[in-house]
Image (cartoon, rainbow, N blue to C red; front, side, top):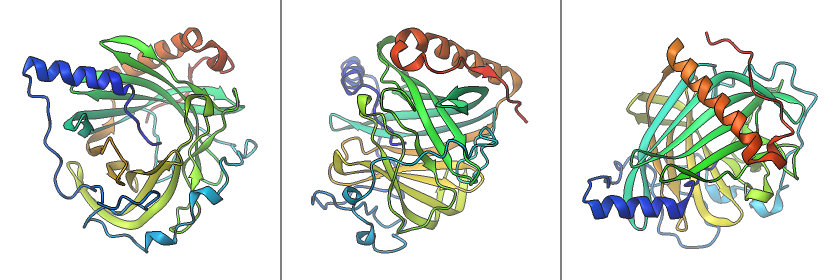
Length: 327
């Protein structure tokens, strides 16, 4: 999914506070191996990160998104074991946590940014399919600005589907928004997080459709067979997905996925990408029993609160329950 800063106004306020206080929270841009924007200012230009890696094929051969369907046909009857998510490029094993660190641009400054993603042992039913519940934490200058529940299921062909999310956005520690979308509710539809087979040149695909909250993100294969190095190691056969939406024609987020690991790097491209977000995987591994219990408790608290904060959308889902077992 294309990550957006939870609350740009809140982020700007936080940055001003830090600068005025004389804190040293401003980060330098990451090293030159991370993808960077190109000087091409042509609307709709395809992303071309400099130097590393080079495109597999000329990206101009990609079919324009405007000619492609807005949404995906959801195979609701093709989920015989939806909570076993073992697609090698996005494995979601209960009790696993990833942490990425990097920087993002706010008001012309590069500031520290971190994301923590944890797979719980909880499930719930969304749009008739049992989904795995994950918790996504977004930190800016060390302060939590978004806490989110995200819901995934794997179809029988190995495709991983995204069935919605409940994100709480914070400013100064206070809840300021929760732009929720849930598949099957108020026009929202499930989208694809990771295809069973990712081939360069295939059409782009919807990563979910939540028009009431502006979730219209899309993905397409940008490169296959790449190599990249991050603090956790060097990885081969890396798949790079270009994430974008039609409302931002020259703003692209590039997600790097390593087999057996999942996401290892985030880059950006496009003259109109204001965030210029870069992230590198710094930690991945299993949670111990105490840490898993803590993330489970946090997820259940969020799940319970969502019925009050977003009753028109979230009420149609079943309460989350512990049904999985961490290895």
